[in-house]
Amino acid sequence: MFDPVVTALQTPGHLQFPENIPFKADLLHVGGRVVRQPTGHLVFYRSDGRRFLATDPAGNPLHECEWVKEPDGGLTLNRARMKLDWGAWVGLKPSGLVNETTLNLATKPGWQRLRADDLRTMAAQALRLPLEEVRWFYRDEDVSINEVGIATIRHRKDALYMLQDGSFERARFMSCMGAMHWDSIDFLPVVELFKSLLPGTGSAAFELIRGLYDDQNEGKASPLRLRYRGIPTYPSEAAFRLFSNFFTAQAPPGKNAMSLFMDPAKSSQVEWLPSPTLPRRYFDIAAGCCLTVQDGLLQKVTLTDDPTGLPFLKPKARGFTPCDRTAQVAKGQIIIKDREQETVVPTTLPHECQEEPIPTPPTSPIDWRSLFLKGLPPISSREAYGAVLLYPDDDTEIDELATQPFVVDYLEDVAEQDREVGGILARAERVLIENGDAVIATCIAFDRPREYTVRVQVPAFAQKQAQQLWSVCAGLQRWEYLKRIRFISIARWQHDPFSVDAFDVAYLWIPFAMGDDQLLLLTAVKELRLALRSGGHAFVTGPTNLSGCWTPSGVRLLWQEPVAQLPTFRMHRNIIPKAKLKAGLTLYHVKAN
Picture 1 (cartoon, rainbow, N blue to C red):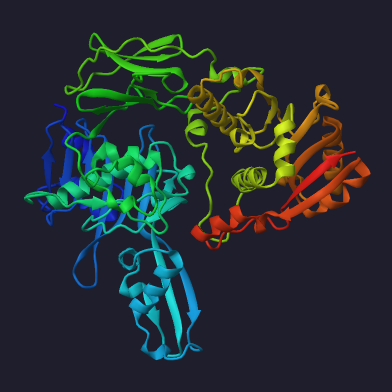
Picture 2: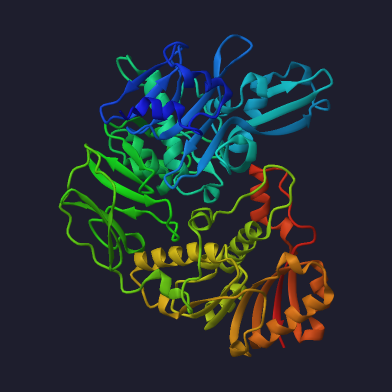
């Protein structure tokens, strides 16, 4: 007879942490216990009351925790793993990222009298934050002054990792957030580098946070009220929606919780109490799907083997469902629909899931896939879901795709502040985007329709950008923009003879693989000149050796900036101080003669 408890504990891969392996053989014998929740979900506890595993009703894991003893005898969360809807795993390491700053205070009169709170006060003044916020993240052990006046300040952050085989043995840094007090959760965090998160990471992390919070508040007369905290604060609508799935926002009388939260100086004034209804996940490994149900209603269906890298969502009350992909319960079955294509998901409906009569949502005038001129290239589901930019947490060189946002975000700022550059982009009628697969949507302006030709090198990232462009146009209700954008997949950097003397503006990223090969670089610049009309402008990112290629190719250099000196990259180094770009990488603004 099927026993989900046995399945949860004994299926290979469900328990990975050494501390938890003894529970496999005999849960009760080693002092463990299991609690079955009203929805059938299982939570497994150690003898000390700490959860080490949570699963769906069938025993499929949701997250695993590893607790270890501190020297003082207390328990602390050492690591956690969280399973994403599409089957990948992400890891959490408390205080996994520590940024350290040193200050020489020996020249300051009376430095011997300075204490940790004096340093916190200086930090609060520099950051323009209340002292209590700084105290929250800088503990006594993080702030110290030695006998010769050298102050050391450590800013701890919890690190999130992509676990390539489900374990920390092949972990790759993904993102970070404010260091949580995992043994006694007392605030809510927002993730930094949020664009680097694999799809579903935020929800999986808050599933863990809410689970531990419930464990810690069990039996209390009233649960602890939480607030959002961060240094600096990064409030966003996406963060508010994520929080609201697991907690309920409460604002002071006469205040709007959302408006208050979006003000960085006032975000912490919003209090969060546990929501009575939570998103609950159900995996069906045989059917290759994950269902998300909240308050008895189906919210989302995610297919493991889906080359779009997108879930199917409950239809919106108004407007179009993202990328025209909907999921509904009808006659005891789950029906997913991708525009006109309708499919029955071969899975059993969870007992708590009810049928909800929803009017048939409208289908948008344009399919996001139509942006690909020759049809969508083959993309695996892993490539699609995994198309996020990852940044090393050390001095490992940042790769080509992950470098692109530093450039295009800077150009976006320049266009707003520099009348000349802003005018060049505003007047452009035909624009070329070459090898910028991670930032296509940022290069496209939505002030009026233009013709954009996008030459794609990495299809999975370009697909994600096409989906983002569809979302922007759906929000604006301006479908004519999409009609003039075409994606062309190319196997290598090559000239398109149909775009000779055609473009007013070009965004070009010279592939790192070209290196400093002067002949290849000169060829690339000559082909760029052929693609531009006379007087056309280009923003080119490449090596310093490009400087000798402009004049022989009929192109005039207007200005250049080292990418490492751009404000956008310097902001990134506030998060990852050791961040390192490819040596000599430079942004050039050129004009065709």
